[in-house]
Image 1 (cartoon, rainbow, N blue to C red):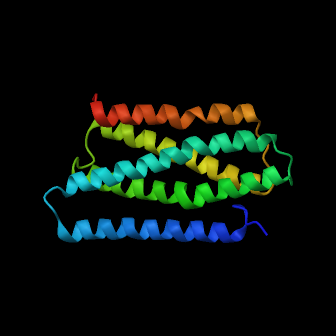
Image 2: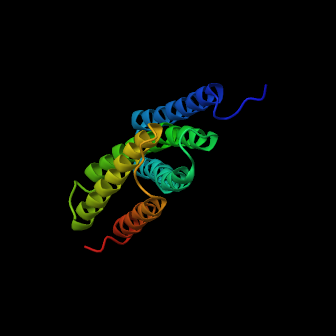
Length: 179
């Protein structure tokens, strides 16, 4: 019998690999805080950027899955495959990446900037909006799991642009610090 990626065994292995990666990431972070190197800020910043990149990749990919899933008949092999892909993307990449990005970002905002600066407040507001998009996508995953999606492929095409626009504003605010 050929093992498919939608079977439970590959899913368990994927979860195990994700947990190991998360453990290594947390161990690295704990080691950095314990060692307190002179360039700790740069290490935290680098790890924050890695987490943000992972989160953004998931936020940009999830609505694409929804677009294709919308066209798949409920109960079909395609629909069940999309359900597996969406759930794994949410649980294995999107949620952990968001939590790490938020944690390290708040640490940087507090330790480096003391939560001051108009650009930082605007950036945090945009990150809250990005988190609301994440929550919206999470709820959509649950709806697709129940075959209860009521949104069109066109809607998901439009929603695919929201994380992109927010990302552009966030990067400009973080790099340029215009105010």
